[in-house]
Amino acid sequence: MHGTLTDNQRKFFQRLWFAIALNFMILIFLYVLFYPQYDTNDDFGICNIVNGSKGSIDAHIIYSNYVLGLIYKGLYSITTSVPWYPLVHYAAMFSGFTAITYSILNKLKHSSAVWVLAAFILFFGYEGYILMQFTRTSGIATAGGLLLMFWALSNDNDSSSRVRNIQIAAGGVIAVVGFMFRDTQFIAVAAVMSAIGVMILLELPQRPKGQRAKQFVLILCVFLLLFGVAGGLRMVDKQAYTPVEWQEYKEYNNARSSLYDHGFPSYSEYEDEYSELGINENAKNYYRQWNHVDLSAETMREIGSWDNSDRTIINSRTIVRFIKTMAKGYMARPVFYMFLALVLLWILRGRKKPVAIIGIAYTAVIVVGLNFYMFMTLRYLKDRVDVGIVMAACVVILWTLQNDRPLFSHRTGAVLLTIALIASQLCWHDNWRVNAKDRVETLEANRTVAETIAEDKEHLYLNKAVGFSYSDAYGVFDTLPYGISENVFTLGGWTTMMPANREKLEKYGISDVYRDSINNADVYIIDKDIDTTIQYIRDYYDADAKAEKAFDIGAYPVYRLTD
View 1 (cartoon, rainbow, N blue to C red):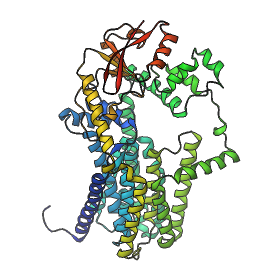
View 2: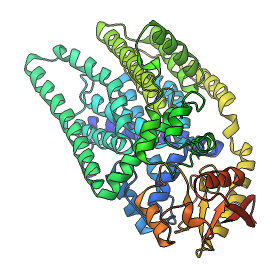
View 3: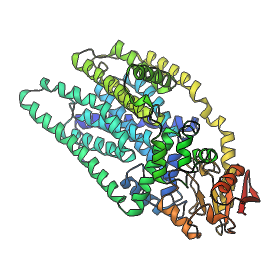
View 4: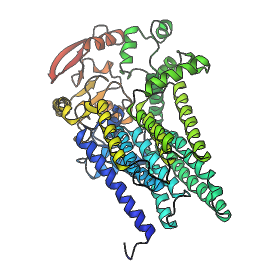
């Protein structure tokens, strides 16, 4: 920059760089001590769509926005030798945490807040950086971006209009990134964070009369623009899936998701219904193990409609079950104890003015409402979702802490942070790098399996959904060679019926996976439970079908299907 910095500019850059430094130190601490991993296989599936491991790079990443997919595609088109996918996640989370740190330090105006923020970043940083998952990343980025915007619009912010505009723009970009990772999580976190917006609006009368209407219009325009951009991104994403092949895939995947998220109804209770669909008990169990390539979207929707549980009925029994289930579930989550600690801190050092109390009560209603909605729709107690919601509630509490005096002494803060760090290891020690040696050895062994399969491009390898997994061969920051899985077709999972995988079958001359694989010299099947597979094929395709052992690749037996 040229010229002399004003006092406001100096305060802005000093506190920003302190927030960056604090977050960088905590990130390095977590990365050095713990072994990062994907919380679910979904992220590995998304990564493999964009990293070229399937022999192509595609921006259709299904659960995240198409524009984010284009960003991944552009990066991996430059080089596939860099783990862009996790690096983009880390950049988004780091930005979110830094925005929270910067905003709260400015809001509370005293250095004792550093100890609280360090503990906060430590707990939620572990959930994001070490147990990486795109929904968690969305929650962290969304909360950070929205908080920075709220801080820019707050009465307590005495920065220049130029600095405030920078804060609004930066917060908006971070929040939009959160939206692109997972739009539904953006909405949930925004609902909780709106408590801060409510408090800012309730404090408008404190401004001079001439500024009230102007500030209200500014707030309205800022968030209309934010949600307008989000809406535009949603339209772009929707447009990307208008081709017929993607419409068919989306229909199939939605039916699959609904059925497998809720589970298959009991065969003994619905034997007649299963029989009408031509599904015997062995087939039902086979499908239940995620080998659903034979199931149509219509069949999955039909099966999913049978179990009309009374859980969707709101009555006193449902309320009691909800309370018991949520209490038990949240008590098992380390981040919930961070939430409880902040609640206690608010009781001792929080602002008790009507506006703050309304904000806390509003947050409680939204959080309970979100959890009740997820309970009623059978999507409750999902760590990847709950982390963002709990984090947003914690941010609201941080916003309402007193800012006219220190929360506690630095000595007390250091002691409390040490206690939190030690206590957290009771839950996290399994992921210490020193305890991950077996996991690393497993990855290396399975990597050899993946490389061996990739060398045999003349053959298509069918793979059971719970069989060989590339996520057991490559870690978060490992790069997969281009095309390493292009000759493998998995019999189930959310990527199975994507257009690229259908094209893979066509390349090997297969239109019906099981029928066309029997007596096909170009097809192998990797299967540790071949008897179940053969029984299924005998029941539905060829009564004389059998499996001939071809060879082993590491711990995985490989067969040919014959009759």
